[in-house]
View 1 (tube, rainbow, N blue to C red):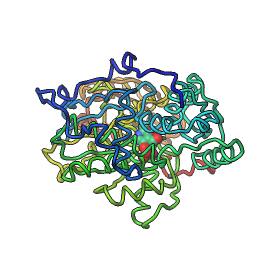
View 2: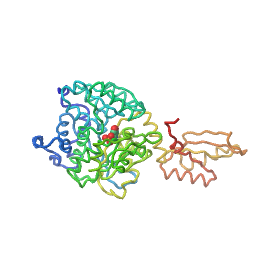
View 3: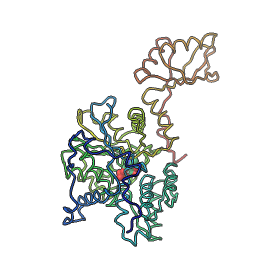
Length: 463
Ligand SMILES: Cc1ncc(COP(=O)(O)O)c(C=O)c1O
C-alpha cells in the first residue's frame, strides 16, 4: 500500500503532545523504557500472537505518531490516590482511536486499500479512520447512528470520509455498515474488536509503562472492550503486578454482564442514554472479551453524576476538556470506589477522548454544579405581607448564598397571606449548601429542594 503522508514528526499534534518518557516519569536519565524491543528481535516471532501484534503495532505507529503526554494530576477531592492522566484526548482527532485505526489501515493489501474501508462508530473511531484514511490514501465510509454527537459527525465530513447516518443506536448503525460492507466489498474495521485495533490500543499501555514504570494500577474506560483488552494484554505481559481495572457507565454495563454470563451478551442501554456516548456498546467484542477475561483484574460501573463531576473537575482543575467516555475512570476514582484498595497508590487513568458537543458541555457544567452542591434550587413559602420578601432575602443573604434567579407565584398556595418563591442560588460547596438549608430552617423558612432525579426512571424511547 502506498502511503501519501510522511511520518508526521512536525505536525501540531505532536508538538503539543510529545513528552519524552523521562520527563513524564520523573526519571532523569533518558534511557530506553522497559517496552523498547528492537524491530529485528521481532522478526522470528509468530505474528498471530496478540502480544507480538502489540509490539508490531508500536513499531508501525512510531513512524507516524509520538507518545501522548502522561502527567500527574492535582489532588482529587476526597481521595488519597496519586492520580496520573494519560492524555490520549490530545491526539488530533481527540481520541486514542487513532492508534488502532492507523494500525489497521497500514496492514491492508493494496487491493483492499483501493476498495476502501467501512466502520460503524458513534464518532471517535470514525474520526480516527477518516483522518488516517485520508493521510494514507484509503477511502473511508463511516456509518454513524442518528444520535451521534454533531461535532463528531461534522468532523468526519471535514476529514473527508463518506458519512452515512443510519439507525437509532450503535447496534443499528453497525447492521447498516455490515450490509454496505457486503454490497461494496470493503474491509470492515471494527472499532473495538478488530485485532489490529486492539493491538493499536495496546501501544497506549506500553507507553504508560515507559512513562510511569512504578505505576500500581491503570484504570480504563470500557465500551466494546478493545481499549482495555489491548492495554491489559500489553501491561500484564510486561508487569503482571500492575492492576488493570475497567470502568463502564452504569447505563450500559455490557462488559460486567458478559463477564457474569461467561460470554458477550446483549445489554439494553438504560433510560435516557449515557453522557459517555463512546461507552454505549450493547454487545462487547468477542476478541476483546477473551482478553479482558484473561488479563483484566476487575470491571466496575460508575454513575452519570460522577461522570459529569469528572468532566467538571478536569476542566476546572486541570484545564483539560474531556468527554464523558474519556473520563469514566476518573469518575470512578472520584466516587470513592478505590479509596481502600488503592489508597496512597500511583494510579493512571486514561483520558481517552475529548470530543464533546458544546451544548452538552453547558448542561454538564450546570449538572455538575448542582450535584457538587455549588448550585441549589428550591421553593419556599414566605409571607405575602409588605416586607415579607425583603425579610426572606435578608435571611438568605446572611447565609452567603448568591441569588441567580428568583420567581414569585401565588396560584398553588391555598393559604391566604402566603406566597411561593422559587430560587436558584450559588453556593460554595456541598457543606455550604447544607448550611444554607439549616440556617434558613432556623429562621423559620423550610426550603423544598428541587429533585434532580425527577426523570431518571423515564424510558425516553417510549416518549
Ligand atoms: C472516548 C472513548 N473512551 C473510551 C472508549 C471505549 O473504548 P472501547 O470501545 O474499545 O472499550 C471509547 C470508544 O469509542 C471512546 O470513544
